[in-house]
Image (cartoon, helix red, strand yellow):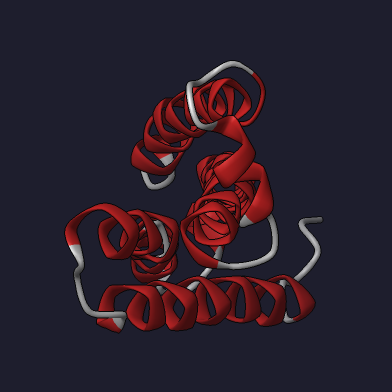
Length: 135
């Protein structure tokens, strides 16, 4: 069942990054020291956190779409399993941004995730371009 893991992981991580968005709203509007947080809107941790939130939801949504397509067309797409794993690996990008912000991790996870998701999307696009019509 190629695509099932993309669907489940996509929905779970979308829920996580949506909840993270509520945390960002709290930090901006209600938390003590919110003025300092607002002052860093385009720089620092605030900016990086918003990048993680946006890319996390985008990449989670891409995993949902890719998972759905692989469930329905996976038998007709060569290397469908690899495309699915690349899309899942793409989630390292937003998770890597969070790891940078909160754990001081190096940006290598961001780069691996970005390259993996880009490869998965391009590979799937080429696969659909080359897909033969079913009679």
